[in-house]
Length: 112
Image (cartoon, helix red, strand yellow):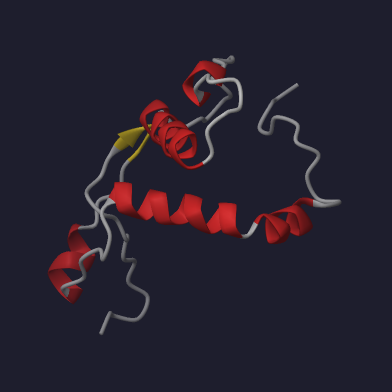
């Protein structure tokens, strides 16, 4: 029902800082796959020099899609993130195949 050529941002009114997203991921993983040493993944977070153009937060104005199309998210942020983590944990073989020969695990987005 959208207008051809019109842009519709899809968002769930769940603005988060990058650190809040990381902490949520750490907490979910600690619950589903605890570390063997009794530690937490939040303890593993390492702060590095920011890269140019890096987003400090994620926010989308989804007013148009709501007003014009009546769209609303099916899941809230926490439920959707948990479902996404579950999917990746349940499909690790697929993830390994995608990464094989395409990504060496190094930090991306550096300028030097």
